[in-house]
Length: 239
Image (cartoon, rainbow, N blue to C red; front, side, top):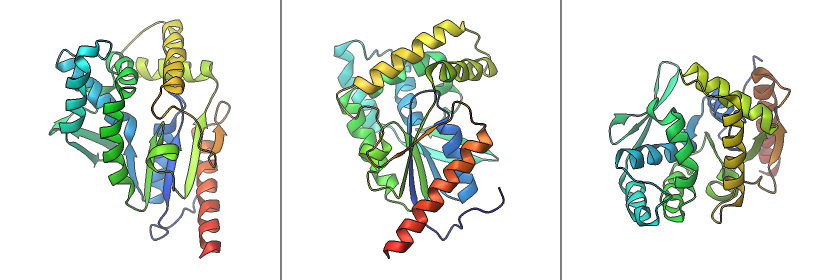
């Protein structure tokens, strides 16, 4: 692909999907291709889980909920590109690697299910989403955070493929665990994310569902760019 939208063609793009679908990779590559701002909201929830672990807090204990919500209310986020890598800083600390451990990833779903945590982070994400030329990804971007996005993509893949991807990612980071364990965790994550009372994981009514089970990264990016180009054409036709 050699032709992309120009930076002057300001659009707001929402990418949602379940764990292991590859939405972070797609969002990052799409934002880079378009010259847009990229916001990884999943990293924000993992950062709260990381801070909760540091503080000895557990979302399974109701008595810890208020303290975890306080963390979400007080923490300061800062995204920064360094070379070709997006770094996340919280309260000045680079946590880009620390939030990718299995322990943090396992805790991030129950942390994100706490209504008070979601309220605080969604408010922060809505402020970020007011900017044009943005690609924001997560699990409730098209439905809650940015419901008026110009383009909405719900990226998915079959559960076994998503589990294999997460298993390979963890091995690349030096964590070796049985594939069956990762598969079980992926299924449980899907159950929690889709059944939570606040902002459950589901495609927005006007989202385009993109199944990437049998697609390469390049093919997924190609399709996403096509979706954004069509969104631009619709917007321009309405002006």
